[in-house]
Image (cartoon, rainbow, N blue to C red; front, side, top):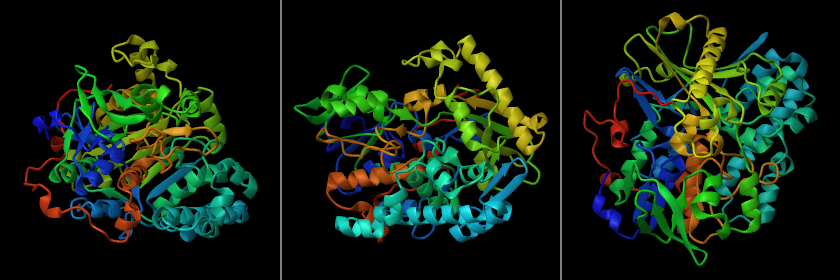
Length: 559
């Protein structure tokens, strides 16, 4: 992974950051013959797809909890196959009769695969909302299908044809989810069940668009799965495609700024020593706002873009409680649990927007050791490994002045930060026990990651993993191509959406723009651009985390 002598050379493309968007873009550039360099400021490749290990016993996913649309014609499997990685990542299907479980006061529902079955389940638990639910599902299923068609098949189609094929998306895609709720006359309980998985995109019904909600829901209703071996398998496999086709990756190399000369990107300057690396193409997988305001500089963009960057709003940040138990949780399957203590999700999101977070109003619980039971690194035999996640207010002020500062300085030993971590840890534990029953006596490992943790590892604005919630008008998000020639941006903030698949699609689309070809439709149709014979072998001791720069360190915490 080092290949140190190559750092002195010019490159065809430099990718800043190694999240799914950056690695996917770099991999497609590499397999099409471009000399590409990936620079990652952290010590491990993968961004939110990386894993970390604790006590030589547990392995926790930072951000991969499940992935949708992983069938034979699924989007992410197609992207991997196109790189020659089809045999390197295996997706284990979650229960098609109930991959998610939604719980709120007086109501419990298992979410199945398929829009028709989903509607049947909704009508069973919410009979008084039956007519409104039918209208809601009709709109969202149509929007989801039309947006997927646009993504995979609309390249080269005439605008009139696109409009003809996407009437529901045109009518509803950019309107808010709240507006659709109102249109369908839905009760507070129905709205909560329908938006229960909002933590998948990090904003509530008054900010989320119908297009965003429908595409994410459609993605999972096509079948949910989990990558065998955890999220690091994705980053490791993409890294193998890059290096196997002549590219290079580097951890611990933070980019200070993107070089822009006469309106064109021409390379980067490293933070350590100010070294310049030249390339006619720079792809930023860094935070979009940070890319405009800090890496490239507002002066190189139109005034409207600078204004949007200054006024942009990101999705809500997360707190994540990582839990290891010395026994399995009784009665649990691999289904995710979406537990809501408040049956009015819109009121709960208004509370978050106002900064209220005494007790998490809802939690998302992912049971890694049940989704991937054969991966021994996850936990010792007979133990449980799960994560409890909750959205929290956007302001970092509650975490103390050090954590809230723009520089993200040495906050981890600050008494105010430690006190808030202790308070939130207890609140998360109490809420998780309300959802699961008592378990704290069996805890063998417990730690909390905060928005400051997310910001430290990924340098994301506000410590949010979800990218932009507001970029100008409702539902607006930027494309991967910027107004600076040769500068592109990939990742969670682009118009391709949040999550692992959305980020990977952004990387594929970006590489297609650079290459001038419709890569995603090509590979979805079966094209394989990568050469599997150039991929390195995997011996019996092969370790995806070690390949990506990680090490098993005992007794350390993410903070």
